[in-house]
Image 1 (cartoon, helix red, strand yellow):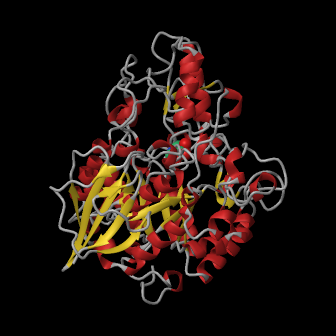
Image 2 (tube, rainbow, N blue to C red):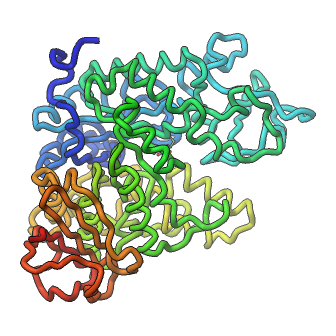
Image 3 (cartoon, helix red, strand yellow):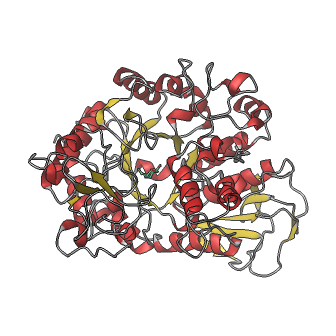
Amino acid sequence: MTSRTTDPIDAGRPDGWWRSAVVYQIYPRSFQDSDGDGIGDIPGITRRIDYLADLGVDVLWLSPVYRSPQVDNGYDISDYQDIDPEFGTLADLDALIAAAHERGIKLVMDLVVNHTSDQHPWFVESRDPASAKRDWYIWRPARPGFEPGTPGAEPDRSPAAFAPSAWAYDPTSREYYFALFSAGQPDLNWENPDVRQAVYAMMRWWIDRGIDGFRMDVINLISKPAELTGAAPLDPDGDQLRLRVTNGPRLHEFLQEMNRETGLDEHNLVTVGEMPGSTVETAVLTTDPDRHELNMVFTFEHVRMDRGPGSRLWDFADVPLSALKGNLAHWQDGLADVGWNSLYFDNHDQPRAVSRFGDDSPEHRVNSAKTLGTVLHLHKGTPYVYQGEELGMTNAPLTEIGQYRDISALNVHAAALAAGVPEGEALRFLAARSRDHARTPMQWDAGAHAGFTTGTPWLALNPNYDTINADAARRDPDSVFAHFRKLIALRHESAAVQEGRFQLLLPDHEQLWAFTRSLGDETMLVLANCSSSPVTVPAEGLPDVTGAELLLGTHAAGDAGELAPWESRILRLR
Ligand code: NOJ
């Protein structure tokens, strides 16, 4: 590999550049359609590049655009080195990279290498027990004493994320393959060094094409537990494998090897590992720069706090503010000295933050979207804006199963009904938590199909696009969009926002989210009323704000002793 200073592919990526960056996530299928087929595409993104430049973001992360049968909307890849015709061509992607780079914006690709599609040539070959690729995936015979392919003959009882069993039956070889998400997404066997080298070669190919980093899908699942690697017997009555695949024994070894073999650090690429089930301890190990693994991880702790107590997929609960802010503070403290945080409320797998953590009623939507943005963007780490979050887009009014498209929603619905749960209960869960809420098309304007497509959208638009849309937001100086622009600009300007030490205040308060960020002699105080009722600012537990400068607020400076519903203030203390 050539050295960093002379290599043209590294241009524009100085050491640590990503520590002051804001990332914008695009779900291409739902962003902008350019050819009228009702599905967003890469030329559509390029058409909207000036909108993104105007918002001020530094990096675009594209959810997968590779060739795929679209069982899980592209998280099932059949060719890592080509673009799905639904989304365009490699030439379209090159044009997007160029358009982004011209505006100083970087591009991050989604790397989905825990599993491939069952249509990937590697897996097609692997179906033949005699092939050299049999061992590229995880194969097991039927449960002893059972006829292969009959109910109960799966090698163990672990469920998949989107299917009743993590073992999919292959009638040709009469064996089962391990597929943690769905039968269309077989897990790769990372124990096999040829698999790893094939992945690294593919990554180098993308790096040479000029991309600036990778978001790594469920990357902490790649190292499998002993039962799957053959080092320990599989318990046919066991049902925990699905949970036990997280943070496996060789995870850090594999990440270090990947970094070395592809030059992730050498080229100053930005890397974020999606890590369900990761803890602060795993994150420290993964993001310690001296260990050369990844720059940051996506934790799931704060977005799983509202799960019900048991394992039933359709149970959920409300989360007290003290628990939510306490969890973020735990991560701030845990990564204060070593490693780095990623900051998100929204992404393509989560319901809309303003509907979940805020108040999406007409009265409070704008201020609660702004205040959630303020809180998140003033934490230390790299903030992620998910398309439409900057508009305060809300959950969609989904009431019938026929309105859902997501494989996960359909699986939850089927599992609930199979367990004898009344359909209303399953639909209540989906109406609150389904991934489809994040995937309704981007609301550009109040015209036909919100300006998303001239055809029929693949998923119905949220009908509130007549009032909530980018066109209206950009003309309104008090919009959520205007507020996000200011938050992003503040991060770029302020070393205290980028690197300042975090301290949570009033940890038990159930309405106020308050914290400071301090660097040198500068201290910023964030005061946010995360409730739909007014709140009196407590006399105790907060620093003196006499003479403080209001850097950004949701409301015109009013009564210092009270915050209106969803009012927030960023103050620079004197
Ligand atoms: C996480 C992705 O974000 C999600 O959309 C996908 O369904 C799973 N990984 C499987 O790839």
